[in-house]
Structure formats: C-alpha cells, structure tokens
Length: 439
View (spheres, rainbow, N blue to C red):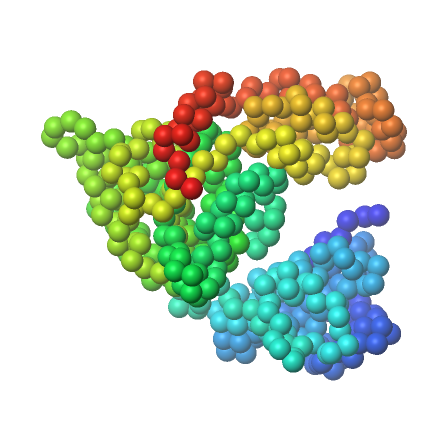
C-alpha cells in the first residue's frame, strides 16, 4: 500500500470532499456545518487533504475570524481511521491559520460523533455537556514578533512521546518539572513551588537537548535556544547580549529557555584581574535570580562537563534540580532500535542481539549505527550485486520479500561504531551523580 501525504486543497479535490461528507452521513453523523459552508471554506479559507495516490482519504477545513479559529470539517475514510491522519490534518490546517495570530481554535461536533481522538491528541479540551472543543494557541499575536526575533519556535506536541526509552528520566522530568508547571494551581494547593531553572548533565550524545525540547513540547511553551557563540558578536558584547536576550524573553507569557554547553559561559572563575569571560559568568549569575521571579518560564541548562561549572552557579536558589541524563539501559536501547529500524523489517530483526551488542552506546550512537546499516543495505542492493530482501546474515524467519537491512547489517555497523562515551567518562559520570546530582 502506497503511503499517504498531506497537501493543500486544490479545486479538483471537491469530489473527494463530497465523498468524505457522504461517508459521515452514511455512518449516522450529521456534520454541524452544511456542505455549502464546507465547500465555501475550502475555496476561500484554509483546507488540507490527505492523499494516497490519486484518492482523497481525509480532509480538514478551518476558518479564522479575528483572533478566533474554527475547524468546520474533519473527516477520514473509515479504512484509514486509527492511523493518526486526523491529528496530522488538524496540525496542518492550524499551521496554515497561524498567520492570523489566533488566540483560540475551536470545533463543534455533533453528539453522534464519537471519534474525537484527533482533537484530544492536538490538545483540544472537551467542554461539559457540549461537543465543543477548544484549544488555546501557545503564542499570542503580540508575542509572534518577539519570538521570531529570538529565533524561538513552538515545537510539535508529540516530541515527548517520540523520546524512545529513557523511561526513568522521562518519569523524573514529568514529575519534577512538567507536572508543577502544567498544573500550577494544583501545585499551589499542595504548597509546591513550580521549578524555574534546572541543569541537565551527562556524557555527550545522551539526549539532553532532546529532553529540553521535549519538555517545551509537553508544556506547549515556546522553545528559545540561546547560542552564546552567536551573541558574542553583538555590539554590546556577550554579557550585554545575554542580558538583552533575557529581557526580550520576559515579553513572552511562557517560555522554555535552553542554553547548551553552558560551561562555556559559566566555568569556574579564577585569576586576577577578572577575565572577560568571568564578567559573562557574573552577568549570568545576576540574570538567573531575576528570571526566577517571572512565572511561566523555565531555564534549562545542559552540560557535558558539570565539574567545570562555577560552584556559585549550581548552588541552591539558582537551580531547583541538577538532573543526570545517562546512557540508555537495555529497555531504552530496545525502544530506540525499534524506532530506528524500518517498520516493515523490524519483525525480522534480532533486536535482542542489537541491544546486547550496543551496551555503552548513547542514543546518538544507536541512531548513527541504525542509519549506517540502512545505507549499507541500500548500497549492497544497488552496487554490490547483493539483495535488499534477505541474504547472508539474515535472522531465522526473515521474510525474503522484506526489502531493507537485515540483522547482519546492524551488527556490522555496531562493531564499526566507536562509542561516544568512553569507560573513563562513564565512570566520571557516576561520580558526578553521587557528588552533584539534585533530583
């Protein structure tokens, strides 16, 4: 079966919209908006369709009025339900409507409609006694310019779910960070002060940046990454540019601010007279308390070398938590291999063998090895007279019709991949957890 894609509505798609409309009616669902309104919005407002080959298999239509947006039609063919197409169609039509600076996106559904997962997956909330769905747009119209100047963005909602494995780390971050920030009123009832700043530390390639982005995605807050190397060229110097960046962030209602490799601007201060970089560290130490006074914000700093950070930087009162992000365990490696192996061949791959062979690999190492295996299999099929549908090294029971890499390809690339984290670095990390972690 060929894959489906999502694209903008074209005039020749009217017949497909009619078919989807009739499908709803045939299933006992009477759409809230009549057919003429839906077709009018297809032509003059915002509409996207899911297409497989020449066939329309789904559609979403939206209309914007001032700062309020409405989903006036959403449907997929019965045989395509349960594949997440509705969720992606809603995301696509919302993206088309973003230029209007919407504050709210809503949908009215008939009582007989029970398939509402697409809306709940996109963050819509069901109103009591009504089939009424409402979604607050994460960034308000007045904030769009500021966010653009900062180079920030609102990340897809599903990043959190796409973090493969790392269950212990995800659960810790969910409980310590996401819960009190997302449920601030409930946290206040229990006397919990929502966190304002956190340090993620661990060896290179263990997913610290991925986790920072996933936290922003989970909260639906804008993600603003601060690059000290870029700020250094500003007229006011790095310290002045850093100060101005945080002043600009203060104009956003919510934000996750991320500084990677923070040791570059917060290393141990020493020597006389103070160096220019010590002045930057001093400025950052002044910025953090002011940042902490602003609700609806979270500062996430990441470092591979936590020992090099200035002792004053990590003290209580500046950072609520200092959380280790280490190498994936067997369960996490299993999830990662299952994610990176093509879906149509994963059942034929000896994943347990890959998990055993990749002990000590970081998530980045596993992804590199998986991509390399796919490339290796493709080259064998195209240039070496090999076969992309099995061959030497194939696991028992592998389907000879499944075109793609086999177990041997993965084992070969694992053997050739040099682990990012050495045994010495891994041992140092365990010492750092004992000495510096605060969870």
